[in-house]
Image (cartoon, rainbow, N blue to C red; front, side):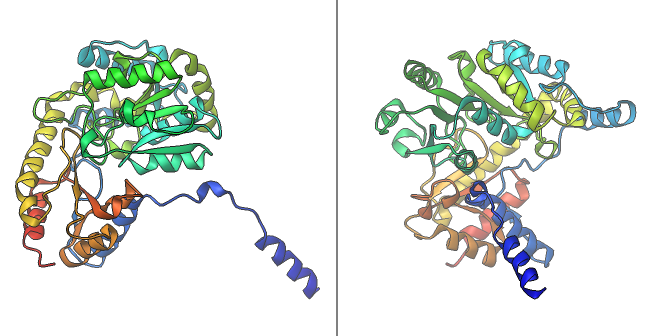
Length: 395
């Protein structure tokens, strides 16, 4: 009896687990968890780690959600999303970029995070190589790895404005199947202009490389710069956008893809099976988001003031090696003259000042030990207080 019981226990202990979960944690969320635990214990925390607007969804969005909760059934939608919302997205591209995608090529997804999973599953097979700039958004690398794709990190620096370039791509050994481009980028906040977008799109088209264009920070730009969409330069690119950043709807988990014609049906089938549809309440609410430009642009103006304050005050704190912050709401700092362990450095800042900042290893495993990212999406008073604390920190 005892031997039999031990045999059962042995069999349980031998159960298999997938290698797909053996990816690096998302350090931003790790820092957030630690910061929240400290806040729960009574420490005042200033959140400069998380890439989340410090304001709520627009008033009209909230009202649309209330009406939908009261009057609508809120069942499943079509897998590709509400036709009315897809039409509003098409109109948005016409108004902002002068390019109207057919609504048949627009897919509403459960946040850009699900959009990346769907894009990668639709465009690539296991073993395919996909290039991305480092520093870059860590979930690109981790999603690719979990799907048995091979991320190829392109070490980009100040000379390339932390963006991929054709000359950097030429240095990659072996064939590439895809390229992820983020403009404005996370963490550096840099952008590609129209000639650079055109050059990268042409490079990819000539070599059979599928371009994935992450445009989720469009609308959040400074000093007169405007986002450039890959839609203008390539009919083969997969474009990913989101209601989270400019539209301030992070927790609503809603985004969209603009999909090449040859991929829309395969993507739709994957959506039907993996997600069924994006949340109906979020889709109903998002219909109103495109009517809120005054409120949303006021938010961007607030980010601009936070950006200006930090660009002025952070050098006084020793953070004087900053990437050009064209857009998004981040400053990426080279702190190699202060430390060679950004994780420990950020942990000290959290412990001693109560300011949560993300170490650069999240964005650049090879070189991030000497960098960090600061988000200025939060309340201006908190940004100002954090700058004061950093400036007067005795390290």
